[in-house]
Length: 346
Ligand SMILES: Cc1ncc(C[n+]2csc(CCOP(=O)(O)OP(=O)(O)O)c2C)c(N)n1
Image 1 (cartoon, rainbow, N blue to C red):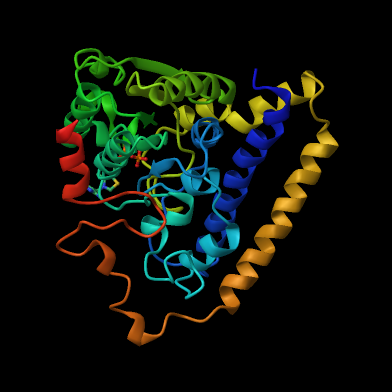
Image 2: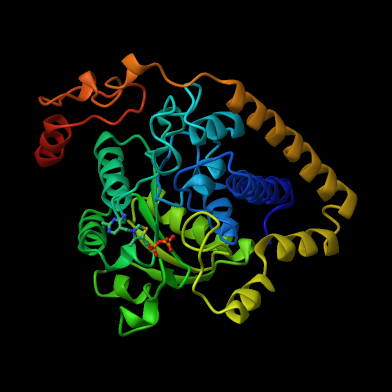
């Protein structure tokens, strides 16, 4: 079980993600929000169970389905909602949208519209952390579809060979858009792929946050101790269709079977049965988060759109320009030849 002092915080993170995503779905339904948003409902235990062990200085690289990862890393409702509404007060000043939210103050390396592209980013951040000996770890979240991109194996190989402080967290929700895992792979478990590369591959029940929390603790401890990376394959499921609230080719009976093991309901029942929280306490937590969401939506809708002259700002960072040998902002990631030279010298 998750230690008492941590359990309610982990529950709150899961609930915070669920309520945000459900509100986004409503806003789409009511035609108040437009554009793509890939909802994370059903998978909350993965982000919450893993990120519970991360310090603000640790790195996370996310995916197109990234709202949950940002919330679990400490993201704020108001700035997220403003970004979804394309307002200047959003995390990326309204120019990123759902699939590109990044916040370097949280060392959130970004949601990512390119499937699998966060995996090498997290691996690179881990490489920098190792060379700089700053004790940071890095986590790559990605789906089963991403596991069939070559860069997944390349990154795991580099990480294993160099014992990088990174944890690869595959959220296997069975589907890549509408394509079932077993139609694009001749084996069940993605975790098995780690074994041939010389790193542990662990299968986790992604609906049980206590299991995710426990296995993430082991993997992150391994990374921090210098023993190298781990691949965690969390078996999970998304409740909505691939993108937004429209269209879902999946068998309703299959969706219902997964909903019967809802990660939030399972954990709430456990908190109650172990005397860690009452029904009323959990409901009042939800009420407080709903009020925060109301305020976030109002904030977003009242915020200005980005000014037209802002269109070319923030698309290129002068501090990490072509010569790329300076330290980028406050992230502590030194980019370019400095890191590589330092590594080769040692
Ligand atoms: C390189 C690349 N190929 C294809 C796409 C189109 N695409 C967007 S999301 C997606 C499915 C990804 O599935 P998975 O990695 O399992 O993540 P999930 O959506 O299940 O969270 C695809 C194919 C893309 N964005 N990038």
